[in-house]
Amino acid sequence: MRTYDCNLLASEKVVVIPIFLREGTKLRAYWLFFHFDDYQLLMYTKTSAEKHNAVCHKNHRLPMRSIIRNMLYDCVALFFPSYCIHCQTKLLRQEQWLCTTCFACLPQIPYNEHTDSFMAQKLCGEAPIIHAFALYKFGVGNAVQQLVHHLKYKNHPGIGEMLGYIGGTQWMQKRSHNPFDCVMAIPLHPKRLRKRGYNQSEHFAKGLAAALNVPYYNQYIHRIKHTATQTKKNKIERIYNMQDAFAAIDTEPIHDQHVLLVDDVITTGATVKACAGALFNAGVKKISIAAICIV
Ligand SMILES: [Zn+2]
Image (cartoon, rainbow, N blue to C red; front, side):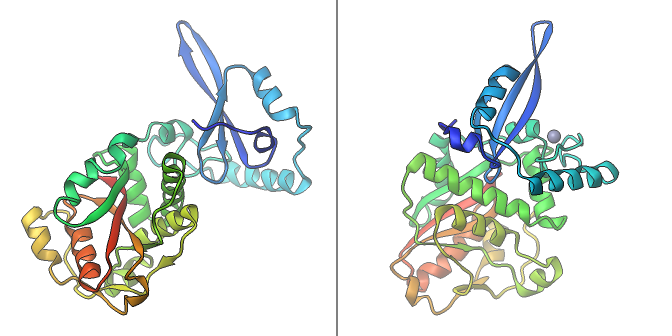
């Protein structure tokens, strides 16, 4: 949990959500303070008095436009409520896609594994990858699976941007410096892009680029082979499937840059390795890998 400042707590940028936890035979209320933009947990208090002091000592008042916006939202939510995509509970005003409980329980990959070990074991030994990290551990039936499913197949590209922003913010908090010069996404073949309407990895990459304050590029790497879905293939079949799948063109402007290459889900790493290989062959010297989750 990061430290907070009073100005932030007294601003519109903070979402306050109560949760109730059983302590012995009693239910106790906790007030969770989230940053509105990046969903980071700022702090929690145990009593409503602490909450009152934390928020109100700056004489904070909601501006009229926020009050009207909230009223409109409540009217719409009355007739068209949104539900958590994992546990199906009704979402509160500031929640989106996941309820606070499911969001707090996402299986994050601990930071000491997060960088340069877990993903690196899959990727770095076989290619000169500098860093490799994923946000979450994918599991059948867990909330990460639901997030990825809605991101890829239910037309919710905003999930990618939200997760990218979380990933980039976490990197900056833990590492305090940014070694990357630009972010690129694993491209989709034009046929699949037309069918889906958007590239889910691109939205994750844009969120990362925004949080890391570096440009996002999509003009240097292209998918030239329309491959069948990888989900039912083993490791060898995936590698074979990915041969010559990517082409890097006109990469001279990024030869000396450190590229953060982004995918949504990493299983064997065959796709990112093939894509990184095409960039290496085209002259790019430094590549790191980031993903939403790892299987
Ligand atoms: Zn939930």
